Amino acid sequence: MDIISRVKNILLTPKTEWQTIEAENAPHVKVFTSYVVPLALIPAIAAFIGWGLIGYNVLGVHVGSFSLGIRYAIQYYIMMLGGTYLTAFVINALAEGFGATKNLDKAFSLVAYAYTPMFIGGIFYLYWPLSWLAGLVGLYGLYLLYIGLQPMMKQPAEKTVTYFVVSLLVMFVVYFVLSLILGAILVGGAVARGML
Image 1 (tube, rainbow, N blue to C red):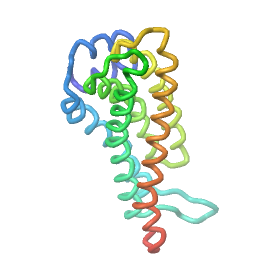
Image 2: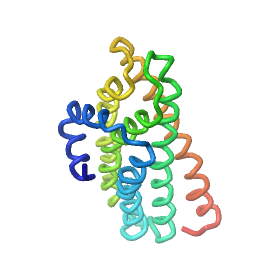
Image 3: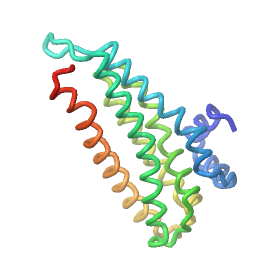
Image 4: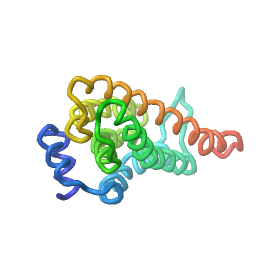
């Protein structure tokens, strides 16, 4: 299946698409290289354009520079790639505790396809005053994760809510920690050196 059809199907008909994804048994490396890597470029490129080329004004002061755009692009790209893997590893590690089947390939597919709204919503980073819409669009990914848990991880239906809540907490912690670390390294260091 091509990437555009997969994006359309997971966003518009997720219940049937999860069944299709589950039957594919795709290795996580294939999903990573053919789906996550290209889609993670959307928020990265949008962040580069938004911070590096367009910027925005705060009380008449222009905020943005080429170097800041590059730093945010790198930060978002690493967050998307690393966050997908880290979240999948944790969801897979938690699987047996919720009566689910432990399978890294399935856990990775679950996370990668549930992140689709975050990848696509990253387009809003083009104009920073609208960047909050990226997070709003990304919330749909929580629904995708919820309905994908049972077909992908095969956990009992009565444990879906608990598994989802714990998985959700893991996703937030992963992104919060990655954001802090990468922000301190990439953006914070540039501010300290006066490069912005």
